[in-house]
Image (cartoon, rainbow, N blue to C red; front, top):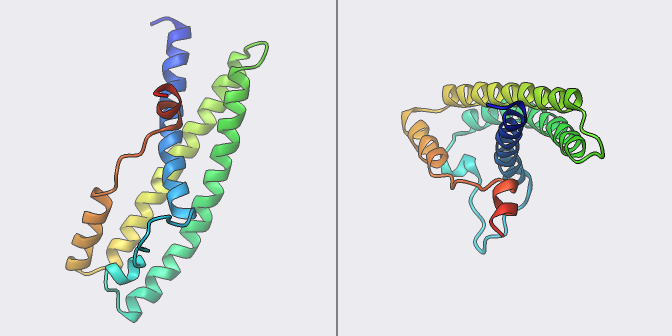
Length: 151
């Protein structure tokens, strides 16, 4: 594969991953606009008081770390897009931003996995099944790239 095509393929892969992450983050931070508000997750899972205290203690630092990582990802995504559309292409800058994005995405994925493992330890079998169903029923989100190119 030619280097230019490889760079384009990598860019599209990064953009797709960023779009998915951005959609998840936006879904978490943006208030729901649905007519009927969804009950809080602790109610859906029927957490008792002890479980809820443990859940919130585990969730608070996770959300702070996730928000921080998302902000860093957005900064690198912006820098990558700017580098791609600069008057003169700088392959080193493009590769540096791509590598930073990939590293941050991997760290964020590890963070999510660690959080899900921590949440799993708090829940009983019935609650784990309920959370599993909620996670698997999440609708697939379209990336920004998909949205822009299907208009």
